[in-house]
Length: 108
Image 1 (cartoon, rainbow, N blue to C red):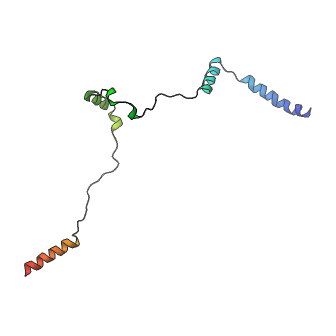
Image 2: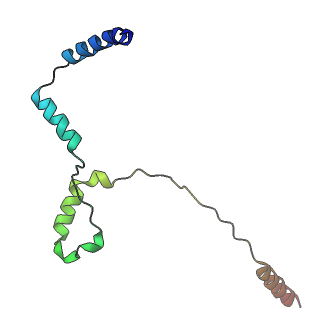
Image 3: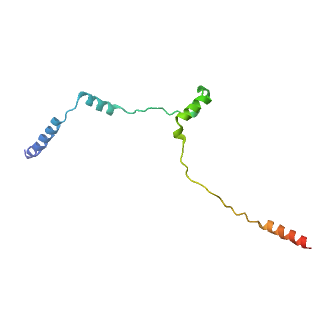
């Protein structure tokens, strides 16, 4: 009996909540469809090796038109700049030996 008395305010609150919720038939239908829908997609992925190349006829004009229409998608900002490069070239041990040997022979 005491449990019933304690649960009574909760039951009244639950009834108040249920009575304040108003759903249209469309909202109920939409929620039901959303709950029953497993997958939605706009495309199917097919590996490129599964489709023969000769199915598609792409000529230079259509390729150029596509590029011109979508040019902004192919423009990339530079990621770095290079003003100059200095790579010192030092003679190898063999080069130095050859030059010294040539100088020695010329002195003789």
